[in-house]
Length: 96
Image (cartoon, rainbow, N blue to C red; front, top):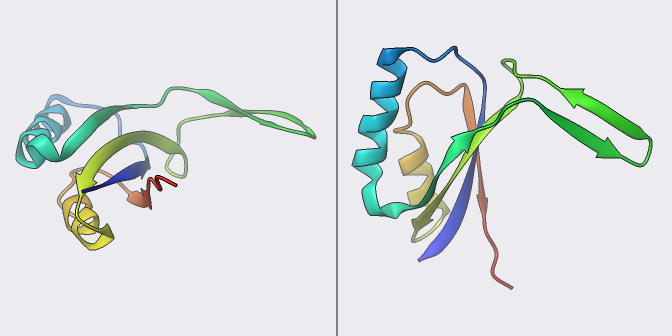
């Protein structure tokens, strides 16, 4: 098995229904999760030219999870079942 990082984009104000949908998804994916992750709060981007405040909006990086999957195709199939997300980026966690 390989590890894959899901980076979630987009923000919807949490409701009871959204929480329930996430709970069902976590159960469905089950032991494939290495880390179910967390949503992100406000943050900062630090570069050589300075610091920029990051906010939560529809374009923002808003959370992460880490899963085990045989390959990126399996990781994509799992990602496509995720509720309430504008988009997900998948990265293989390369173990060089």
